[in-house]
Length: 215
Image (cartoon, rainbow, N blue to C red; front, side, top):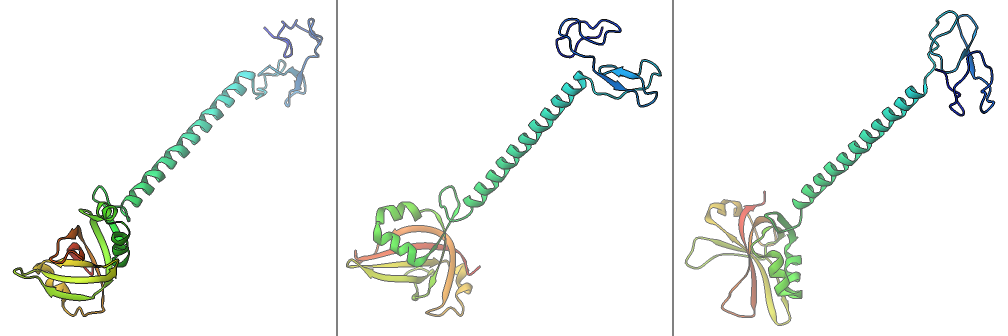
């Protein structure tokens, strides 16, 4: 049963206008025989030629299909954004932050400055964390009653105290010290013990236990 495309009323056979709303019949010409064919007819009523005219349902299906494609595209973009966010977070966590086993990258001077500004906050920031630190060799020596060596890579007097950043070097790493002279730059990675007690209370020594030297 044919229906009026404007009001949906039943279209009487052979009528050129809708009996309800007066809309004119919409027709297409058959490309094969030239006969006028109603818009909603899939085949020519004379020669049977397939008109290949999209029906309303086909149009709706196309819209639905397009909507699904858009939804999939949006989902893919969101997923990509999440992956990128995770990658950035992982990369950042391997940089200069300290908690959860990551490495804090710092210059010896900056570490000493942190302790001068606020000793308690500096201890929280550095103590028991893994440190990658660099500085200039100020002094080197062997500890008393032990085979370990010490290297001071920064030293400064401030507010009546002497602040030193010192590296504790295990004998297994002594070879790394060969040829190392006062004034040379050194890069060390290891665990920070924070402030270690000295005989003189005005000596504030921040100690790092070396695990890697100049690697």
